[in-house]
Length: 428
Image (tube, rainbow, N blue to C red; front, side, top):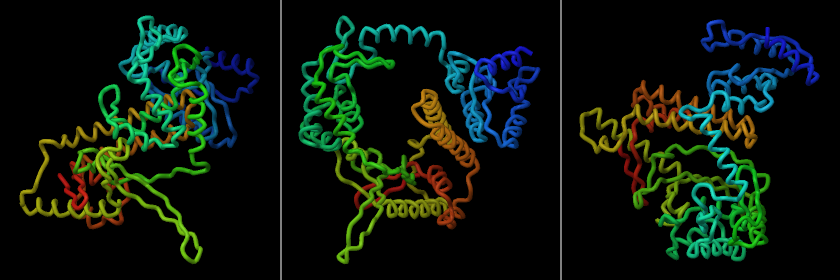
């Protein structure tokens, strides 16, 4: 058998001891893996760590998701997987190369990447230039007269004035300084600008770093000061374990229409007797205020807002059961099945992004497993939504339900929650 011969040569080359071979595809070529579970059981019962050699990722899965599941399962039983491929020995990288992503031509993508890499070697601009620059006639980045002073202002506010990201956003928006598209600034835009070495004249793309590739807006020493400032402001030793918020995606500000985002704050203080106390506060806050420093400081404590919403949902459903007409947003609320299909697609997209990051070593495999679990959760929730439970029974046992069940119920029965300072309106 050709593979057994190749496997033997691989073991001789890398000084491994061959133990056992398992067949994968059946004779019909239907894509099943008849001996895969036999291999998993063999590894589990042996209690020994093994290196599994496969020709490519197509031998442990037929698509990206099935490859990821097999890869994580094999790692879970203590085995490492490698491909007998000099260019793509990593199974996750092999999966993208062999299986690809639906709708993407690997040949065309390779040619485009080669062309982009050739331009990158010359420091030529690719795609939309960053704020403060434009693509010149020769392809190199050139400064924009009206935008460069804004970049200088942002770095000065951050380094010399010691302002945080949100205060810089507020400063820019209060002064009427707009983004290139004429919109308000937000925290993410400012953060990315402060991290971008392009502003000290360094071109960075495809792992290349070309210093003095174009005219800098910020001196290199000032850019490095910004990086030092960022590192000094990062909390040390804090482990993030944020709990999700029940109304995420449903609650919106009644004043500007933006989403209300969940925020967790931890505080500590000393009492008069010297004893230290700690508290955790969870609340919803207008996203526009938090990210763009516009709108007002509209907040609700999470338990109060969630309790008010559940109470209103119960009253609305009781009224509908009694035949009383209530305010409806059927003209604005999307079809339930379409809504859940969109949520599943979003979970699938996040999974593929996580697999890409794992394949290039940017995150640990545990993160990939987390996103795969979220995809499973989205599919399970979509399936439950097609068979809704009795609303009255659900509300009566609300305190005994887990978070996912509560979340599914609200997303099934609520279109949006409009939040004002003194009132809440639930639209179904």
